[in-house]
Length: 333
Ligand code: TYM
Image (tube, rainbow, N blue to C red):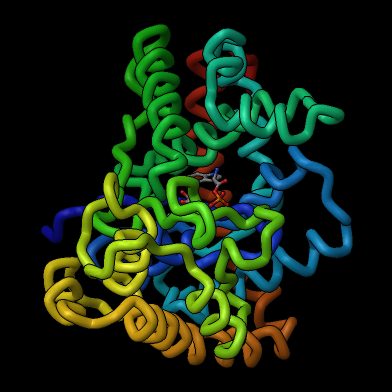
């Protein structure tokens, strides 16, 4: 009998414009994962509500993120692609898991502290509960592996803790998920401040390269990227964060190892090196952008993908939730 495939689950929030960090940290691995795993890729639009959103923009970004997934090689016939709010089990499991999660644990989350500082006028309950909803996402589908960037490591740890705690309190129910972090690209840094993570929400337009940027914009941003006063293209994140970040980006977008990339740029000046990085990024993004635009022109197709995905996701999620309710003593009819 064919052995059952392991399950991969991950999601992205439809907030701001996605960056090459999002691509490098997770999306780029999705196409290949589909042949070895049973994959589920979600659009985390309920997580997006934890910071203020313009409702019509959030709606448009949700659709455009689904189109991006498909444009990056996700095959909806094989893989489940769906929108979080279309599967009510997420909010329901989140509530159940809230009762086995401690306030102190949530207060210690780095992202909660960062976002609370950034949005001091809107430290809402959802922001604090964010990791529990993320745990619910993953645990509903009994995911074995979760491909994410480095910044999600702490959230994944808490999802594992919650799963283990529930299993011990009640009985084995949830699979304890493992993070899947790329050797290269799990933390792409800010082009202007290369010790900081590149972020969708950074205010300096030269800091992040967006997946929607055209070639001229991409080249301009890389030309302005911070390097150092040395002149060697060498991977050494502690001593040379700017150059090392550019090497990581090149390695991801040109599909070459760091060692190969270092070798290729031995003796090459920073100016030419930066141009090559920009070219590699622009060349990879161009076909994705045109495919995404094509898909966005066919809204009814995209709605169909979301509907089918939601039905398939809901069928899996409902089974898990029903087990959880039973174990917790919620009366079922
Ligand atoms: P989000 O939307 O902030 O980011 C989406 C993915 O991109 C990765 N990422 C990066 N990787 C490398 N370098 C960077 N500079 C960089 N910036 C972002 C993130 O690690 C992430 O993998 N909480 C999640 C969304 C989520 C989720 C889930 C993920 C909701 N439910 C369940 C996994 C499983 C988030 O905010 O990602």
